Amino acid sequence: MDYQQTLDYLYSQLPMFTRDGISAFKKDLTNTLELCARLDDPQHKFKSVHIGGTNGKGSTSHMLAAILQTAGYKTGLYTSPHLRDFRERIRINGEMISEQAVVDFVETHKADFEEIKPSFFEMTVAMAFDAFAKEKVDIAIIEVGLGGRLDSTNVITPLLSVITNIGWDHMNMLGDTLQLIAGEKAGIIKPNIPVIVGEYQPEVVEIFREKARQEKSAIIFASDEWNLYSEELQNDYLGFKIEKLPLYLHLELDLTGTYQLKNVKTVLSTAEELKKQGFKISDEHIRAGLKQVKTLTGLHGRWEILSNNPLTICDTGHNPEGIAEVLKNIQNTPYNHLHFVMGVVNDKDISKILALLPKDAIYYFSKPDIPRGLEAESLKQKAEGFGLNGRTYSSVRSALDAAQMNASKDDLVFVGGSTFVVAEVV
Image (cartoon, rainbow, N blue to C red):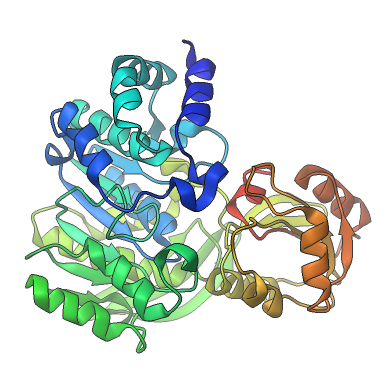
């Protein structure tokens, strides 16, 4: 099989969350452990940092990888989902693994897949661990896919566990209260391994403290460690000053969404903990890494400018907390009228999201090009119940074209609602 045939096989043969939703979510780690066993347990052959949470785990993973690369460490990075190319999920020093590596892995282990019947995600995790072990990375940043306790990535023994925050997402799988969701996310906390929680959230803090006590793990809340001053947008960078005495840093970040400042605190606390474990990371490595995250790691879709006339921005925020942060950035952006290109998946309760959205925007409803995409007409009807008005379009691209055509030069076009919508425009 060539590369495209290999992808077609993976997409068609393996249960896939993007396509199949909850039925592709496995309730235990048996398949992952069996696959890894047949690969000679690669997950134990490299050092790692495990990063979970509801929002910001992808950005946090990429920022940390950029800093470690800048510090001279051969750095693996596993994230999901991908936007355009499957290989975005598995990177080493920012470079996607080769098409041939994907083909060879599947060819070699096809019989194992047909016997074990893993999900698409379980197979991808095993492929990443195998690649990181074979390439002898110095450290790998591993992003949790969904939840934590039962996520396929939760077979590693990391140097650090990181949980960015807790919000409302995937309640049909993780639980319908923040405490239940936090319990699933806390499942990545391991015995005697430090854990960094990005945001101190009073409603779930005891969930994390109790789990850390049980595991005898030191726990740090990054939001309590750092003081942030005078952030401002400077050309293509978000400039800010941050301190944890005696450390005082003036930094620039090439991810310009202001919500990234929460993630920066998590990244800096993680870097501090890695330094305690012997990693040589200087202030200059931090400064240089954060200034070129997109260049070093290939990150896309986070408050990303697609064009300037009219100003068109996309963002992958897709749950109430993520959308709330996006809306703060929209409010801080000068414009006359807002044109909102929107699509969502069909297995989420989107009422919390729709309740947040501005009623004076013009909406362009579309269905992301995946089986789980919600039909544009259904989205339009739901949105109208919240006073949001607009038209439906046959595709995300046609919706964007219409929005840009209708927008005046001083208007703002925003594209979002789902990672899969953003994947069609970046």
